[in-house]
Length: 514
Image (cartoon, rainbow, N blue to C red; front, side):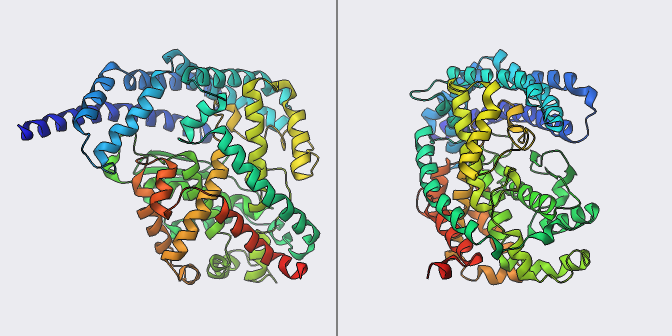
């Protein structure tokens, strides 16, 4: 009898996996179409692409939310009750149930409408951004705000509509919890920014704005990310308006960047950032491929990987002690007379700036706070879309002390609002905090970490992340993952300590206080 139960359970698991594999394939086909739209699709393909994506994502939604999936989940939940929480089987049923219950609340027509909205609004956003004209994009953003509201209403919430959207992106996180995190960060960041401003001349970053050949920038950055662990045989690199990573499957994880002749950071750190995302997906266990488990635990956890490599490794002095000789060999003229430590200081200069993706570690979270607050206000109706640029500019002045010169550098700078994606931005700050907490534990486990990095040995870093984060995919919620990896829940303390220590040393703040 027990053998028959095992066989029956195994058959049901295979049935469920077969359906989930079909759903995964449909979603990945949609991702491939989205990648093409961002890289090579001709402008005239917008309308057709919107319909193609709408069809694919509606079919995936209908297949996933079928009664068949619900029946299999119910039967397997009863039969797998004794399996270990960590097992692939129990995790698959648990995570699929969470996704299924949430997806069942969304009507297929709404899913199709959301799928059409992004590809339709995306080229208008690009044109509006180029023309510095928010008015062109406003009607499309109004539509996307309405769709975000409809999603929140369909999912349901107890206190704030944003909670419903957060639960989709950062399971277990609430708006109130985020507000408390941002309040703690603000208390630490504001005085640190003020201290740095008083010693601004301590760090000079003019070297970053010299002429760097674009083709050489791309080829050099790609060689670096391959050294870090990005497997180019299972990926590719292209250019796009907004850098991104997309995973079509374990053997096809793609990254993009953008390049400026007279600003080094844009291409280099953009590619390191996206490679951090890519290495996460390249490290997920193959056994859970073509299931809902094959992805990052959340956007915030995903962002922790990109920002850990970009900032905690890539903006560290050991990193540049290793790579700077090869960088000067590629760019001898622009780097003439600049040593490794001066270059390290340059790439870490902290100052308020307009563009989120180019912001330094200290001020970056203030960019996210602004977006988080504005999304909440748009969703709750206390802010109208037509008033968004004015609200953005006023908040920016209050938080970062700058007068926003135009819509391109203000409310139109991010691609996110051209899609129906409210609730994504907080993941960037969550990622900063997770990354710092992971690095704190990594340093305990690898005491000579800096020495390894200085020698160009990145395998210990990647290996630790593979074991602690990557291989698990979505088996655990962000907090469950953090408990397993670091022994404690998410906290802002390691990140605050890290920036205070690093930037205190860079700007001589401790000496100044004495």
